[in-house]
Length: 162
Image (cartoon, rainbow, N blue to C red):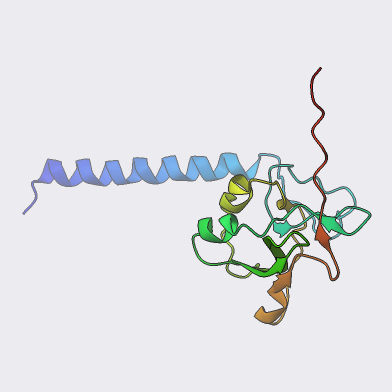
């Protein structure tokens, strides 16, 4: 059994705790709200450059990309979001060369950890700010990042110092 003074001590402690919580709530009632009115403010919406929403593979005007199909991004992906499907070609001089066939990205399982972008030795992939990816079926979240008919961008010759 509690003693009489202990009972009142606990009672007043509980009331003090309740009043502290109510004062925090009362102060929050008068602070300026920062709610975004999306999608009405779509034109003025500012998204941080560091925000990661969707993986992309940039292509230039000649439909060329920088992916060498090395598979490092696929190996570093913690949950198998990326599949790099390559094919082996034989060059004119008889050497075998790996070429990107398809780069499959599953947005539905991506954790946006950025390990794929960091580990890519040729900077072939990057995250964009395109965050509007809502769909009714998960199969629409699986994308092929390399465009049809795209090929590896030719390396620029290194200028020799004289």
